[in-house]
Image (cartoon, rainbow, N blue to C red; front, top):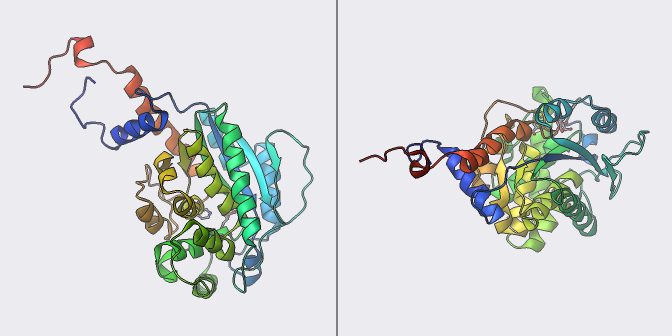
Length: 328
Ligand SMILES: Cc1cc2ncn([C@H]3O[C@H](COP(=O)(O)O)[C@@H](O)[C@H]3O)c2cc1C
Ligand SMILES: O=C(O)c1cccnc1
């Protein structure tokens, strides 16, 4: 390529990764892209770990379908499709059925992870399978999958998963989520500490990973883990969003380590657990914008970078073809 070797920095790694994923060089453009917003509720909401009422999850599902959320704005900017996957929203919502809403509820929200298992092993497995199914279907007509999440209180479950899988102490992995005050943050840390304290230790096997997910995770975390597995199986790149996706990717990595070779981290979230999660995954975030929203927004913002990396590999002339003299 007509540029000094290495001059595209991290984008060269991205281009090589895309070529590896496709098994072809140059890789196809990561287009069209589809963001799947996995929505679910959390029994741990009862512990007062977030100021937002639980019904906001369902209300945001309606907002996503109406096109009114930030993820819709960013997706529109990039020509990406948005689908919403209900894996366990607790509040009923009345929306017109469209093919952009997949009703795949495993249960109407998890149980309170502060006091016992969030879900059964079977429910965790079924939610993982929803993610695999969605990724498989989207990969048939999309060149890039993007993870999104919606679930009031889900940063608490994310922190618990990150502690469980990386050994990070609860105070270092637990953050302010939507912007909680000091007393609420202290409650969150205590809840995460207590939940992780019930676990037998760091999960090593896939069975232990599923058990950890069932004990302290969320239904959307399970589905996003499956989404990563499904994207890898379909040989399509999957762009990960923030701390919810990062914690879910830890589950995916424990279920199938090679699956993470198909994943890119779109950005580094302001939530403190995200950095140790990405470190454990060996993923370098493409953007650092102090975002803390979720929905897939940070991953979508990184999509033009990934597309440009692929485009450069496709379009840029070689020294030979352009008649440019090589360095001495
Ligand atoms: C209106 C609104 C839109 C959102 N979109 C994403 N989240 C994000 O915030 C929630 C997690 O934060 P916490 O653990 O503090 O509850 C999740 O729903 C996440 O997707 C939202 C939150 C709200 C309130
Ligand atoms: O990192 C994220 O995706 C995030 C952070 C805070 C709240 N919701 C999502």
